[in-house]
View 1 (cartoon, rainbow, N blue to C red):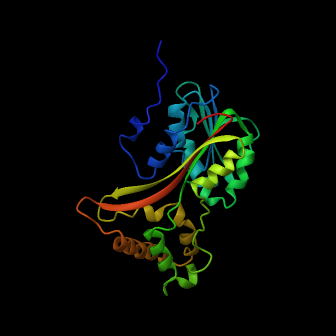
View 2 (cartoon, one colour):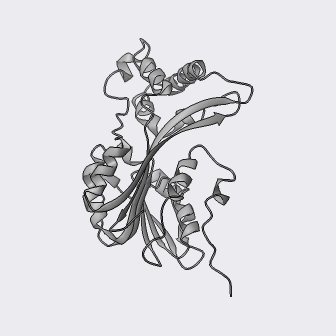
Length: 272
């Protein structure tokens, strides 16, 4: 007879990745869930990379991921199916801002997705109502709009070369609130809340340290606006990387890139 493996967040941090590290930090603060097997929803699952980490912690859980990108869901299907101890990973295409729970959940979790839902705090009541007693709603959202990186992006969009195409209404307008605001909203719904913010100092290696960061989901609206001009997206990204290199100079040990995120773990009818 084999013992059930225990969740060890440190083991999953042995090889941290700047994009997945926040999810690990969020998951480390999520308490044990009230039911086994648990029913879990991942809002904004992307290609399922972090959703699979949920199955590592709760291998008997029924886990669903939802995302508005059909391409991401197609990629996530590669890891769908039965999990280690009789659980299941399932993915479907959908708008997380319109998601309405049709059954009780033990955990509703989201990583770097709710910032795209302008009125996401207004959805909290429906999502918390769907939690079982002792169930958890947890999320993290990036909030780097006051950074030098976003300043460089705004300046570039307003420059003569790009102003006509990108100067008005194209740059994403993320609606991230202060941790205390999230705490207040969820506490009023009967949750015990742990809310905090972290600013990561990522050390990016290589001669082109911002290659991955300038092709993430936050850039898609800008690149889409340039899609009808051959070569424009590539020129824009190259110009942005040049500006990033100026405001985040390389050092002998890499390029230090500061990135702020907000975290919330709310437990219904219980202590966090």
